[in-house]
Amino acid sequence: MQTDNGKEYYNKEMNKLFKSLEINHFSTYSDKKASIVERFNRTLKEKMWKMFTHQGNHKWVDILDDLVKGYNNHYHSSIKMTPTQASKIENESIVYKNLFPSSEEENTPIKAKFKIGDTVRITKYKTIFDKGYLPNWSTEEFKISEVYIGEPIMYSIKDLADEEIKGKFYEEELTFYNNINEEYKVEKVIKHRKSKGVKEVFVKWYGYPEKFNSWIKKTDLNFTSESEGDPLKI
Image 1 (tube, rainbow, N blue to C red):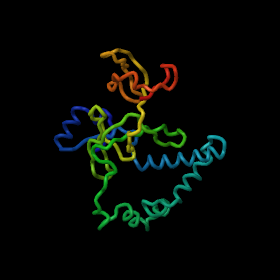
Image 2 (cartoon, helix red, strand yellow):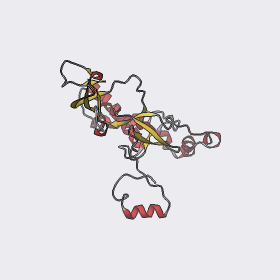
Image 3 (cartoon, rainbow, N blue to C red):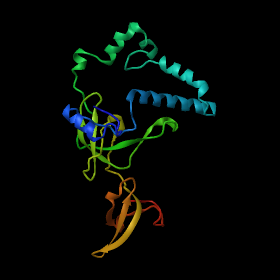
């Protein structure tokens, strides 16, 4: 059973009830609440921003009806028709068949995009009215720790300290990350020391929690300017 992470679900009484009924209770700890509605919201916002650019202003009241009408009369690959056509009672069985195919298609094994051990970054969704309403990605890297095959496929992840991250994640909230040529940015140098004649600095890594702070050789720092106050790379 999937719920949000409200206290009405996370308390001793509910936990006892879930256990007694052998219910697997979990939350995604995600900004995404209803995937279909979220996808519609994203599409609508993208269309709105295109119109804002064309109009030279952010007036949306006068264009909303036309945008929704355009959306409802646009072909959707999932239902193989437009939403307007899908709303007609005579197309009900066709829509159901397109959304929930039976026979051979239904028995096709579901293939996960990620596997255990893959390195990923997680999405950080911008606010609803940010331009484009598109995700950007965390600086911190994570590892896939568990894959849950189903509709939809979901994943558990761990950070690089092998600590499990709360909740489960949709595929759309993760992206592959190849760090072969990555330069790790240093947010700040916290302190200095000399160890066996070698100068070292204790650094805070940009985009990572403080538990990842570490000592490195000062010569490993790549200064972006002559000032140590500027961002650094390694």
